Length: 489
Image 1 (cartoon, rainbow, N blue to C red):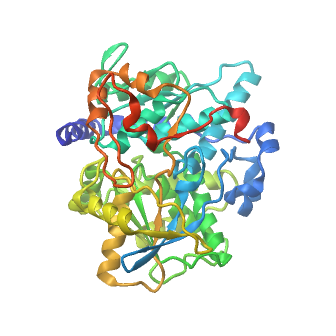
Image 2: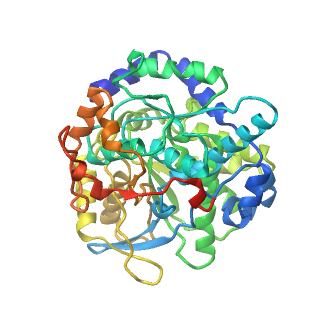
């Protein structure tokens, strides 16, 4: 798997300009759009943190709540350590996690664009979402597009992750949900064998037809503004006395959308005068979850160095794009402040032994997750026991490992550390038979899914042999209703 990833990265490096152009085209395919009347009538501006502080944006940027709720901050005790957890995993009972914030604007923009295209006698743009085999983005898009009443997305699974039951479950979740008529994977499609390069180049005709192609992690200006709202929400919780002002905020970094939004959110909260993020030791601590991106940050400063500021999926680029979009929509221009935060208050943990390989635990993160599963005591604001977060090896456990190591090294900090919990607590199962759908996938995909083993004592399970009943994993999934008439959207 490492050689496959390294080979793909090498191929992309040889044609970096082409790769950058393609990713920029994917960003632009989403774009920005003002709301349509049904969105204004169906959603309360008070439910969106960004609109609460910049009310003029409500008429300039489409937004849907997706039935999501304000996420709490819980306390966690673990073998003598204490820290906070921002429970993005509880954002939605259908599928939570950080992707909900991203999709609140991106799906709403698509909905608004489709409605206007039809009203003008044109064709409504289709939607394609791309990701790796264990992609949370694919699952989140399929769930929330269905609940919003949008047509099912086409899906391109570009490459496998390391085998892991959590990754297999994500593909099974996606297969249980409404998907479009064009679903491809790295093994093969109706047209034959696909390589990663061919899969990426195959997106060009879709972009030329005006279709919307959600880039990796839905890293777009609209998506970043959703994450800005998340950081403003945390600032409100600090200002309201619900939680102490955090010192270090730890989070996994994949496409860079979430971290970039938090950087912008810090800059905007300070511009607005909110009494948050003022601790002398305040830092955003990002842990790249891909070994190649971690190596590039460690050796080249991928996310912060000026030469990479035009490269999508870097924090430097994404912060600039998000700040420009905010100003374009009539909000304050916080570009300078956000870049100052990025330069002096963002730190990356890129150690190879902690990051490991993309899509799986490292030995360090697996040990941290095992300790967490065995001993974490999570409590809500009233001190009552709260659900234990899902420390997946793909993302959250790597940020947890960095947090625990630094608490052990330095002792209790003056201001509490906070973990940004990005993995949904719910593993959804829709109305479709996902087990039958997996059986129809290419053989390489089926083998990959079957190789995924459980990594957590809290979530034991397995992918059964082909032809057997799907009893080995379904107990880990929650049936969700995807009909838009029952979502309250």
